[in-house]
Amino acid sequence: MTNPALDIRIGTMVRANAPDPAGTVRQILPHGFESIEPFFWQTLGGVDLPRLAGQLRDVIADSGVTMSTLGMFGNPLEDRPLDRETLAGWEQLIDHAHLFGATTIAGFTGRVRDRPLPESLPRFRQVFGPLAKRAADKGVRIAFENCPMEGSWATGDWNIAHNPAAWELMFNALPDENIGLEWEPCHQLYYLIDPMPQLRDWMPKIFHVHGKDASVRWDVVRRHGVHGAEPFAFHRTPGFGDSDWTAIISDLRLGGYTGSIDIEGWHDPVYREALEMTGQVAGLNHLKRCRGGDFVPNPA
Image (cartoon, rainbow, N blue to C red; front, side, top):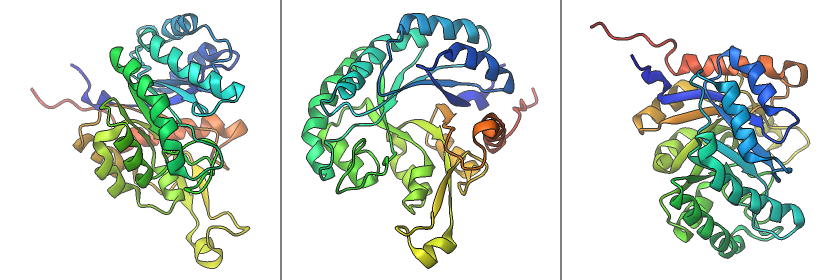
């Protein structure tokens, strides 16, 4: 009997240009991760993608773990050497996605640096128009993470896809059906946005979900605002933040989402360094409980 709970898998991200990503996956799979998002920061770093895909498939073997999404995080809209490597990385991941079994490539849109957000749209259309067609020809979707990377509407270095007004501009500029979002509640909470109405509004465009949360210190907001010396919010591993993941997963199911929620670690101020995997496994188990717990088949 198939397990319908696995229509939404709970997994984690693994840095693909680290020294031994396959070794990392081998170590963490026994903890119960159901999916892996291999990702790259700015550059493929000379990684042989067919070889990496083979190594990861060998480790995963017959466990049923999936790699539905690959990540490429950098600024493909600009023209510095690393930016050009990021764009080349997008192209190569699209071309090699099938080797991983991936159907989505995710990352930042990039941005024309230090300029108001709308000024990036012509370059966004110029770069991602061809990428969207390249991806569609291979049955691949493109998903933009909603992380501001400390940018704003007025200025920034990395990403324009960080709030709903920007999404409207982006999807009007490129209405391709295979362009959407890699959504997570963390960045919305950091903007003091309620993630739940946003999730419902944008459900058709959500292609992938990151398991990352945030804690807002409302006492700091009330006393000092959001631009003072006191941090008013922290990124958190799921289970340690403010999001109602039971409600999030319920709405994802109601909206017809199938795919994975991959935990984005390395941000929690408490469960980090020596406690990184402790926090991630706690987050994994929390998300599984919010998904409904162990699958129990109905009586015959």
